[in-house]
Length: 303
Image 1: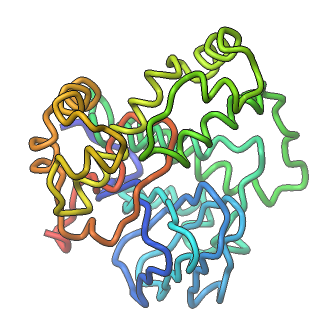
Image 2: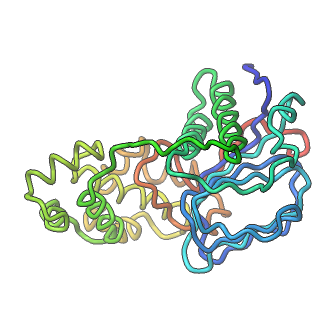
């Protein structure tokens, strides 16, 4: 089995919890790294840092046996990515004081230039698909997260990167799709929302999103349906209608095309009663199932 030099990964996930959900108080026996893509009303409370309101995109670390709890945003669902792990090499504690509690604070707000969001999503991708050498690749990404967290308090933080952004009209169209996921949506309506001509909108959307507008609409509807299959006991037909498909057989064909399996197979493979506490995720592009726990190298005390 491929081995890592510093980190043993236990389990991880990318989940969206319902508004007002509570986690803890608790103590865990390993480390937990958590990334919150968006700020909100979530509050993290720990014996070391006291009460921290997570009102900005941030990453935080909880150490073994630290008392802590989460009071998630009471008004909106909260998405977060988490990784549980332990150390197999004590040298990591010397290189990364934050692991031993040497940092000023366990919570770090993310700046515009941060690469931690990409690192966390890429690790989730490796955890799900487990390609060759996934442990080593994931470890390098995790160490890079530690490096950025350690450098955040330095005297010369790097300047923001000048990355080209998605045009505002395309963002408006993407938001419209998310807000109307259960209704019929046509490309002409999206073009009107963007304020562009039909042809210019479709071409620009494809260039920035990587899918045609019609493909993206179907993709997001199927992904939302996949979430509902795991969180509810409703029939597949009822869920198909909720995400805007009047023709259930067309829905079946699209689901298999996008998800690589039938809706029944998906529910059987990923279903878990604990998912009833989760809310549908709203990520626009992902390459692994959200609201799903990736079981990795579990230590003896978890078996």
